Image (cartoon, rainbow, N blue to C red; front, side, top):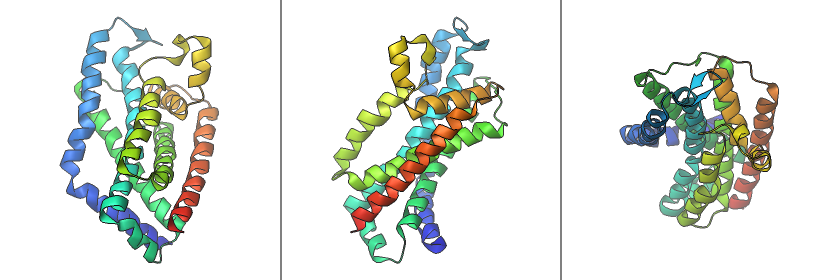
Length: 246
């Protein structure tokens, strides 16, 4: 399994290496726009728990970017499936389903962690320094990335075309990115809306990442929930890959 896992992971990393500069630029554009458009526009007018809106926004961008970049591994998988027929080669190779899923998920997590590093560096230019040294901060980022990378691998096996993948992003990832506590406190919403948004995994990731970045002690519920959902999605990805290989 280890050799198969390494082969799958290294393939994705080599692809990432070849287009690394373009990836870094694409990972930088959205955070820059959000920080300029929202951070400077709000200024010090809005404060949350004693923090400026810029300080509130960056942990939310970390949660959102780790989600979108981890989920983006699904697009790469489908390009390989539909245009390069790489998945057919994996089907013929002695690589187990677990090794394939683990390799792709780790590749998605790697992309997510790079995007997080980009945001934190950009934050330094905006003179925003938070508590990024807390291990719980990186644990929340890792769980969030693991969850959405697992979701991406599973869904990538179900879609029938590259266009279907874009639809999934539009209907699943984009709404969650804006409603998951990224740009505003969830408790400012009406009670009925807050209860619905509370069901989104990104809401709990944003909460845990923001609390640790602010130096607070987060509760264990968000971590347990992200872990449970991540494991379930990983197992479902295994099942989907097995069905696709059959």
